[in-house]
Image (cartoon, rainbow, N blue to C red; front, side, top):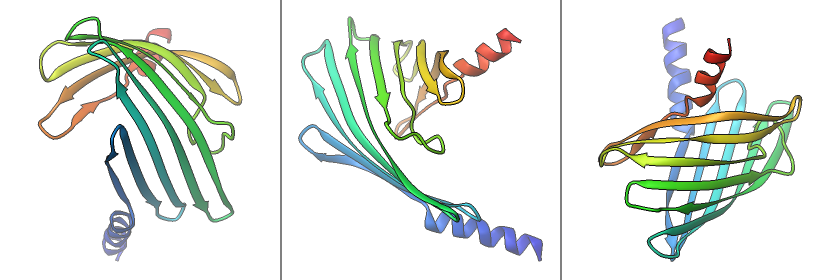
Length: 173
C-alpha cells in the first residue's frame, strides 16, 4: 500500500535525523546534526563557536564547522570557518560584519561569503535585519544579493527567513 510506504519513509527520516546545540563551556558553544534523506543519503554536521562580549557595544563570533556526507556514489567532507563582529550603538540597533570561507566547495555545503547587515528591534519580539552579501558561486563567480530578514521571537525560539533574494528577483523581473 502506497500510504503505508510513505508513512514508513517519514518515520525512517524522523528516526534517523536529529539536531542538538548548546553551551559547552566558558565562551564556547556547539551544535551537531544528522539529516537522513531517504533514497539519497545522510549528512552529518558539527560546529563549534566562540562568542565573546567585549563590552555593551562590541561582540565577536568565530567558528569552525565540518560536514560529512554519505551518498550512494559519493562520500566526502567539507570544512569551513566563519566569523562576525557586531556593534550595538544602542539597545535596539546593531551593525554586523560577517564572513565565511570553505576551501573545498562540494554539493553546496557552505559557501564563501561576506557582507554587512543592520538589525533593528521594533519590539521585544519583532525585529528586522537588512543588508547585503557577496557570495561565490563556482559556476558564475561572485554574486551580490540583498539580505532582508524579518524575525519573530517566541518564548523558546526565534523564526526568521531571509527573503532578500526573493524580493531582488521579483523586482528584477
